Length: 229
View 1 (tube, rainbow, N blue to C red):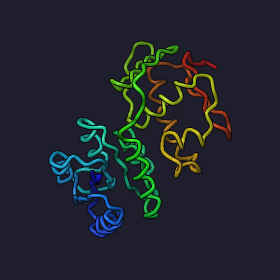
View 2 (cartoon, rainbow, N blue to C red):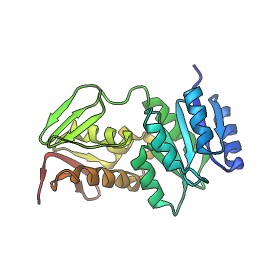
View 3 (cartoon, rainbow, N blue to C red):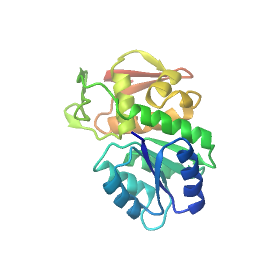
View 4 (tube, rainbow, N blue to C red):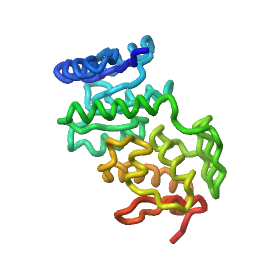
C-alpha cells in the first residue's frame, strides 16, 4: 500500500516543492495551507506521516501537533527556521517527533521521512519495565516515577525506553541517535541534547533525583534509582 504523507505549510512554494519531491518517491501526498484544513484532511484521510511548518497564521504548527496527539501517534516532522529554538522545544513538548531547519536539504528530509515511516509500525516492544523509581508500560504508553504519571512525547518515550532497557550502561550518542531517529542522525549530538534536556526536565519535575547522567563527549547513562549527587 502506498504510504500517505500530509504536508502543511502556508507557503505554497514549500508545499509545491515537497509534493514534487515526495511524489517522485512514490508517496501519496496531500497538502494543506493551514492547520484547520490539515485537521480536516487528517480525519478523512489518515496519513502515515505529517510534515508541518511551525509558524502559520491563526493556529500554529505547535497547536496542530497538540491536536493530532489527542487522537494519534502518527509521526510528525516539523519545519522551522534557525532562530525558532523555543518553538522547536514547544513542538517537541506538544508531540512532534522530529524537526528540520529551513533552509533544508530535500535529500535530508527524505531520509528522515523514510526513517520515521520505517519505525512507525514497530515502535517499542510491549514488555513492561519495573526498575527503581520507574514503571514503564510500552503497550499503554505510560510512565510513572515514584507512582506519579509523567507525560512524554512519542520520541521522548522511545528514548526513555532505550535507556531504561540498559540501566547503568553508557549508551553513546551514535547508538541513541541511530536507534531512536535513524542512521541519518548519527552525526547530530546537539539534536540528542535537546531531547535529553526535555526528558530530564519532565522526570525531575516528579523527583529531585538525577536519572540521566551525561558522560561528556560519549553519551548518557540511565540510573533508575536516581542520583542526588
